[in-house]
Length: 235
Length: 258
Ligand SMILES: Nc1ncnc2c1ncn2[C@@H]1O[C@H](COP(=O)(O)OP(=O)(O)O)[C@@H](O)[C@H]1O
Ligand SMILES: [Mg+2]
Image (cartoon, rainbow over all chains, first blue to last red; front, side):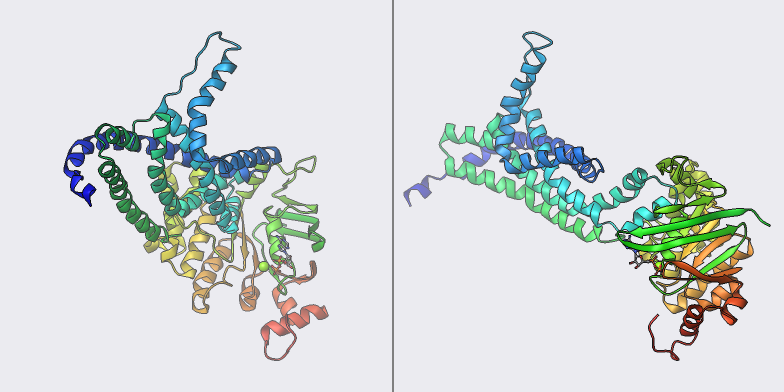
C-alpha cells in the first residue's frame, strides 16, 4: 500500500499530456498515410489476385504469405533498417557511395500500408466475389468491357460493402502505430517511455498512455458501428 | 423483306460435357418480334445470351447487323464485342440495376461511360426514357426504394437510353408479383408498336400470342417448331409442342411436370 501513496497522477498528467498530443499528431499522420496506402494496395492486390494471368496471381500469393507469415514489428524493423541498405547496395552499382536513407515515419507508413494492404486485400477480394454476377452482366450488356465493368460497377460496390470492415482495421492501425516506437518514430509510446524513465512515474505514465488509446478508439468504434448500419442501405 | 438484324448459324453451346444448344439456326429481321417459349432448362436463356455474346458459342456463329462477334480468325476481341453489344439492349429477369445509383444515374451511367455523352446530354436523354416508361416521379429513387415493376422499367429505360436497334428480354416479368406484370408488359407493347426489333423469352403465353410475329418453341437445346402465333398455339405440329402448350394453358389437366 506504500506505493499507492507515492502515486502522482496529477504531475504525470500535467507533464505528459502535451507530449501525448505531439505524439498523437505523428501517430495520426502515420495512420492516415498508412491507411490510404493500404486501401489503394488492397484494391490493386485483390484485382491482381482475380486476374487471368497465373504468373501475377502466383507472385501476389507469395507476397501475401510473406506478409502474413511474419510479425508486423519485424516488417517495420526490416523496412527501416534493412530496405535502405538493400536499396543503397543496388543503387551503388550505378552511383558509387550512394547512401539511401528512409525517414522513420515514412518507413512506418510503408510498413503499415503494405501489411494492412495485404490483409485488407482479402476483404476486398471477398467483397468483389460477393457482388452478384448480374451486375457485371448488366454492364457488359450495356457495352462495358470486363475491365470497365469491374472498375466502375463492381469495385465501387465491393469497397462500399467493405467500409465497416475497413473501419475496424483503421482502429487497429491507430493502435499498431505504437509499434513505430521501435523504429524511432516519436509517437505516443516512445514519448511515454522517455518520460517514464526520466521521472520514474512508471505506473502513472503507462496508465495514462493506455487511457489515451482508449479515448481515441472508443468513439471510432462507435462511428464504425454507425457505418455498418448505413452501409446496409442501398446495397 | 426487311434486313436481317441477327443471324445465327449452327450455334452450339456446351457447359462442360453438357451440350445445351444443339445447332440453332435463326434469323431475326428488322422490326420483327420473336418470342421464344419452351420448358425450363431447354436453353432459352443460353440462346438469348449468345445473341449478345454474354455466352461465347462453342461453335457456330452469331452476326449482328451483318457483323460477326468473332473476328476473321474466330477470336473474340473484347472491344469489338463490347461495341456490338451497344447495338443490343438486354433486360434480365432479376433487373440487375446498379444499387448504388438512383434511377436516373442507372440510365445515365453507360451513356456517359460508353457513349461518351456529356452528363447534361445523358441526363436529358435519361429523363426522356424514364418518362417513357412512366417513371418521371421516381428518377431520384434508389433501386431499393422501388417496386419490382418499377425496377424492371428502369432497367428497360437504361437499355433503351443506349438507343439499341435490338432488344432482348429474358423472362422480364417472371420475378414480379402478378399485379406488377401488366405495367412492364405495357412498356414492351409500346416498344413493339414503335417497331423495335425484339427477342423475348416469356412464360406469358397470352402476351406471346398477342405481341409475337413469330413464336419459337425450344426443347432440349433445339428449335422444335416455329411459326405465327395463331398457327403455333392453335395447331402445333409436333407432339412436344402440343404437350407444352397444353400444360401451360391448362396446368390442371396434366400432371406431368414441364
Ligand atoms: N453457366 C452455366 N454453367 C453450367 N450450366 C449452365 C450454365 N448456364 C446454363 N446452364 C445449364 O444449361 C441448361 C439450360 O439453361 P437455360 O438456358 O437457362 O434454360 P432456360 O432459360 O430455357 O430455362 C440448364 O440445364 C442449365 O443448368
Ligand atoms: Mg431462362
